[in-house]
Image (tube, rainbow, N blue to C red; front, side, top):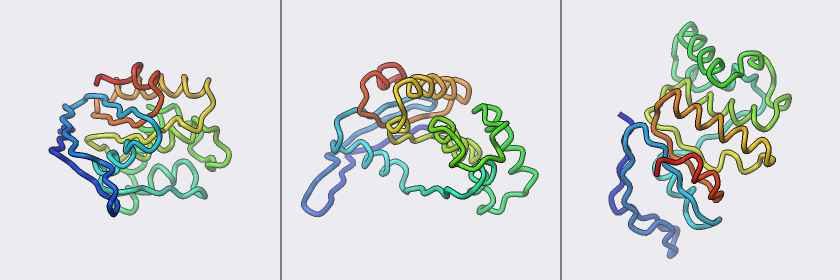
Length: 173
């Protein structure tokens, strides 16, 4: 399932210890937020949980962007199309599937990034300050969208933020 456990995890960069013996127990379907000031290790901890860093291509259409990982994995086109259509429906991106990223608003771009994750049907979603580059009104709207997504999917979510309002309004823990 989507349970995540860490036991006394540490992370060093040379002589600098960033993560100091972290124990973490996240249950299946929980929404957990790492909150703290810039430079405290939130993103580093999230990258440790993820085990990878992901890049995105800015020249693809929304449809191509969301389906990229599935195409690279060799999934059949019909299955890819079905997963992309379902993720687009959930995220209200149906009418935007043929647009280019530069033609999207900040909130729409964030939903496309979430869509890339949804189509892979992961056991957990990891968000690293997903709302930090949005204006205040859009941050509020996207906060509701992420909460709705968590409720609809019932997936485990870890969310990094320095914003205590986001933390208090979204998190189970």
